[in-house]
Each structure stands twice: as structure tokens, then as C-alpha cells.
Image 1 (cartoon, rainbow, N blue to C red):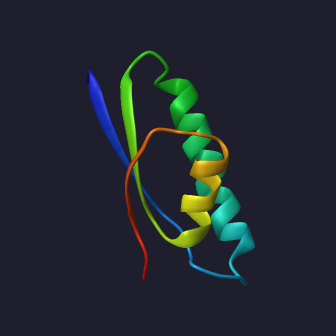
Image 2: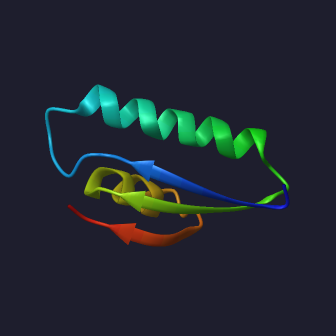
Length: 65
């Protein structure tokens, strides 16, 4: 694969901290594993969007519930 699109689904607000941190941790690991490839990220949920924007990752689309 030369180009990869990742869809990360997180929550919009609290009480899902372990869920959100697990998703973002796995996303970081995926990016390290696919370093050198053209990886784009699309995200559903505010928590994931905030995480990706803080780290300046390649976000191409965001969706809120």
C-alpha cells in the first residue's frame, strides 16, 4: 500500500476516557508502523479531532455526532 486512510472513531464528550485513549494510542502506533507511507486520517468525534490537531497529524476530514 502506498496510500492509507485511517478512520478513527472517538466520543464527543466525557465518560469514555479509556476508550478514547486506547483509540489514540493505537493510532500513534499505526502511524509509526506505516512511517514513510502516505497516511491520511479522518476522524469521528471531538476528542479524536482535538488529539489529532494538538499533534498536527495529517487530518483530511472530521465528523461530529
